[in-house]
Image (cartoon, rainbow, N blue to C red; front, side, top):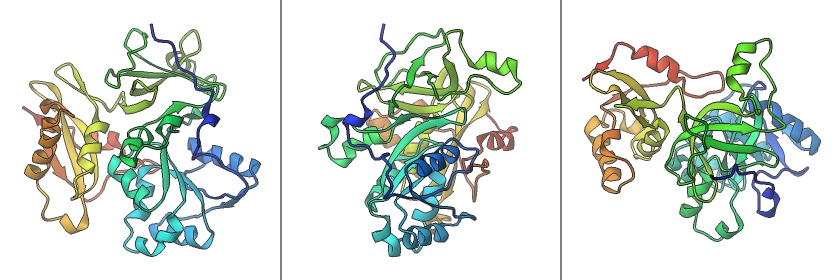
Length: 349
């Protein structure tokens, strides 16, 4: 039986998340978000200059980064795309170089990570929830420091290793830990001093969320690789169950997002007469490809990953729908609940 891992040696390795009094923080996440209420405390304790942007706009963010000499930010992938895709971004390249950016809330596509690094942004993933913050960070281990960026991104583009005093395990339906093989999917359970102990005046929800020995059931699905790095593959409510087998939407989104004509993508489950559920991909094309992109292009693009053994053929979505925008949650994430409701009458063979 594999033992639950606790990483108490984070400070042995260079840590991008490190903050000190020389940093200037641009606060983006709303104050009810995990990072939104955590970073102001950390910034104050570290005697940092802190910048409050008000209205979110790509140009405004770039101007604040330049004029206030911002060195530290955090937010969801949508925020990062907001200013990296701004037509004037090249004029701010020198001010983006060295910017530390914690990406949280959603697993970002690899293509977005590469684009950020091309500007010198020191970006890495973290994992937390409003029920507690800072569970894991994608901090590189010592033997990874001299790897090339492509290989490092295999780990920076994951939720990472547990923070000090945080316990993490990924379990199957019976509560047994899954193998650290990077393939076996299970639910992520946590124990941490920073976790809530109960939901306010909600006994039923508290009982459902916690085990008798204090493990918190996150409702997130993940895998653990042989190095002990956690990768979030989906929310339990978002995973697609086709013919009794799981299809992680995040992995499909990551691959589709790497297509040069795709700006953003969301993969959801649609009803299927034969398979119960089948994946459908909703795609926002890049403006210059709006009238050129088509289903066959994306399908052929995904077949390349089938041939490479990255995904099985039956994971490829049955339908691709091109849209102009996505509904968003209050923190800027794609609201898949609304998307599923919009497509509730779609029934695939």
